[in-house]
Image (tube, rainbow over all chains, first blue to last red; front, side, top):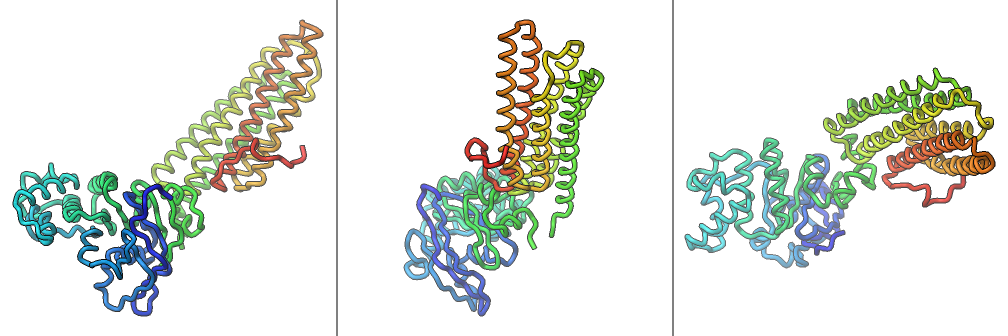
Length: 253
Length: 225
């Protein structure tokens, strides 16, 4: 589909919550330095799929998985250290979740955990990543203030900066703008466009226009299956499957 | 089924398209009657019809832009709206060509025609049918009918060439008829362009339904001419 290499790919991935078959034979390729949107109705499995990519479902009891997920051609369920995996594959959640500490410490938290102690090095990391998350100019004079005092949009960009600070290669985003106002949403969308020069981004969104605006490829999920996976332009103009067409034109069900 | 309000807006758009197409068909019909009967009053009315057609184009264009802005159509819905925007431009141009012919009709109304009009009314009838069928195809989303329209264009082109050859021959033999022959060649050309616009409409209908661009030049037409 693209010249760039596959960053992540899955082969016949199945996931069960107890007896419930939540993901069914998912085989998709996620391309390097592209934005991939996952769309579909609530409960279709898109967030579950997202979480399998950095093994967040390991924390859920009663989950069993078959099939394979490859990151940089290594099977993440067999050949990867989970701490290393989550450093390389970061996640941004629906609701901004800054730690109850200063803006500075939020960004420095990850690097400190990974062993960086030098004050000058941490200063550099904090500044660089706040700049990369388009937040530096708004917070540079109040780095020591509590992050919970930031607006929702600023908090979400702080969370993105916090993910960037541990130098991931892939960023998973689970409805990152659903709790934000339109202006903050557009700032995050602009940020995603800038970040894709250096990162592979996978985003779950319920906003069709958002998927159309920012993603290069789109996967349509329904009842645990990927119904259609293609370039976003094709999905939103000439979808091959009638179920995709019905969903994106709002005539589903 | 959701999006009932949006579907209602699409239905209203279809109704406007049918109204505009009816105006265009009437205009073609009046144009050719006025030309045949040298009826100046009817020819003048075509200018009024052209204004109505122009107004319809603006109204439909505004409706389409409104739908895009407020409903954010995608996939088939988006093609539906963009096709409507394209089709109204073609219909508006057909209206312009009717007015062009009416202008000539008025100018030569006091002259005796150098020959009885036979092929020109036939061209007009074919063009009118093509417009009628192309809009029918749009409303019914009928790909086969749309392709049939595209294939009918050859018959109009053949008539055009026949008329040009005939008039050229008349001009060679008698230079006193040159002025009127040139006028009739223009009229034939306007009719040929009308058929081209109807063909465009047919091609847009195919795109609307299939998402693929269809060109009559790229396929062989098996329709009986």
